[in-house]
Length: 248
Length: 260
Image (cartoon, rainbow over all chains, first blue to last red; front, side, top):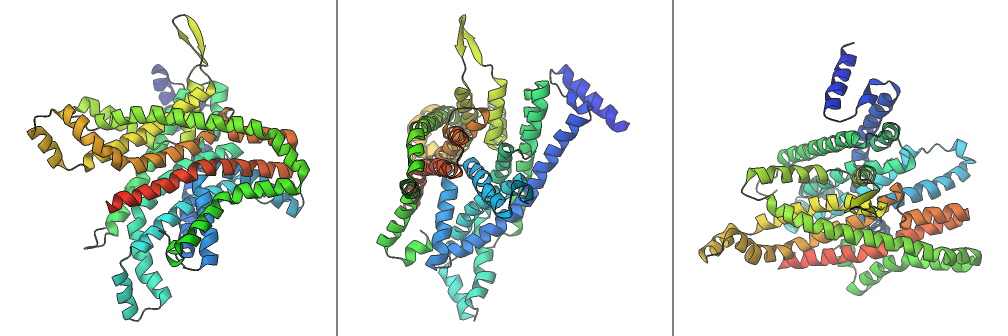
């Protein structure tokens, strides 16, 4: 009861400003719209760890010094960075997805949903960007530090695990936060293959009610807030992980 | 420099990079030669795809021109000594830097009218022009941030020296500070150019006839899986040939400016 009166008050007030949020009072459209927000948040929460883990793996391949590991990853990184994500998404969804469908014998058996393809494509795209940042970080670790670790008796893997990756991660943190902000923005491409994230849900509403401006204001504020939060958390982590005397 | 390039002799690393550059066109060529019916379809549709790609280039160039001119002014205004000027500009930059490109393209497409009246004449306001504005908005916000950062990175002693030589604030900005900013902001500006160029493909979602839209059209009318695959590879190759040189040049400039 409390909730509905709050909604109607909001609708009333914004109506006086010339904005139309009447759909909030209806059950169906409001539900789709709220689900859109939740889907976007869910996508972001899922994509951040996926992109970070894949990015770390790519960076390990890039800096391994073995050509058969680094060359394919390098090629993948270059192609991903220099082609639009939307094209990659359409390609994956229309081509790879069809292959998978043919393999399992018909689209009805295909376990891969559009949601999966958004996570895979956007996740790997951002992972390629992370990989470049982490690679630059690993290469920026002073050779004297690595020498010292080797002198202390660390194995090659231990040096990577305890010396190079922590320092590289710290050095590449600003770039990673930047990539994560890109990630948040990229979740909207899911709209192209009918993943009901926030823009898709909003299109549903505004084709019925013609209130594009009202919805746009909310969407822009929503993304501003999320990215503000991502940037703030990133800054907090950067301060927490500050390396004294290292200039970071 | 990658470890790859460091461990390998310079010549072969160049070769490796160039293989990456010609691999996609080579795949397209070989595939269409082995299956001549596919090749013929591709040749038939090629002008259509090319006209789509022209649209991408036009949108990207217009959006960057508009975005850069507005953004440079906003970057200077962000440092204006008057709060009344500064705060709205800072808010604009913050909101539109964080907004997804797709959302802005939707916004301009659906909010702007489809024709405008200028002195009694009805002028059409086509979708591609709306996409230009939709992409120019984030571009201007990024350029504003770059300009602001570049101006702030110039040591304050330069301002003081300019003042000592009798320059006013705006004269110092015009003749001393901004020329130095140009060099510093070139690499990040080129990053934006690449990202806006790739962003032009989003215009296909609002029905602008550009490359991705053309490829979707072509593949729905040919209705062959191998043609669909090759059409999308063509799209990737087109964007790659446009964006890869930009990103290579960016990296080279960054390295040179860091060394200097």
